[in-house]
Image 1 (cartoon, rainbow, N blue to C red):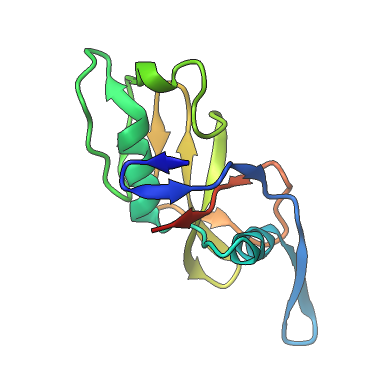
Image 2 (cartoon, rainbow, N blue to C red):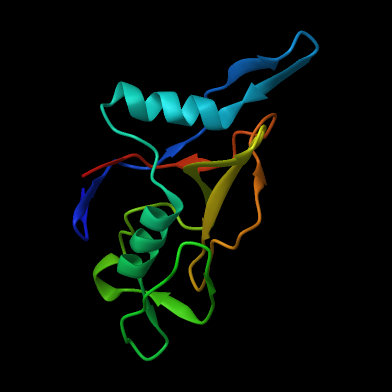
Length: 141
């Protein structure tokens, strides 16, 4: 699906777990790694934080219908989904979407996509041992 100047896959529930071990005693179920592998198998990759922000910029307008530019770590409220996506948004709203970028062992950056806001603040989301409720989307340029 072309959105902006990039091609995006259909979003999917990131409920494919990969067991990872750091040393012999610290093993975790890693859903982020499962999402990353799913994208690689499609010949694509997880988007960066900046690419997720670009998706948000293409998805939303402000309350007056004006275009918005959303930065990689920026949170914006009082938004609405563009009319062209109102009935069929390119991603499932109301979820966290994984970024390809990691902050530290066990943590990956994210972006929330809600119907009236998006959050990509510089917090981190626990990447290992998380439930399968997170979602992912793959990208190719």
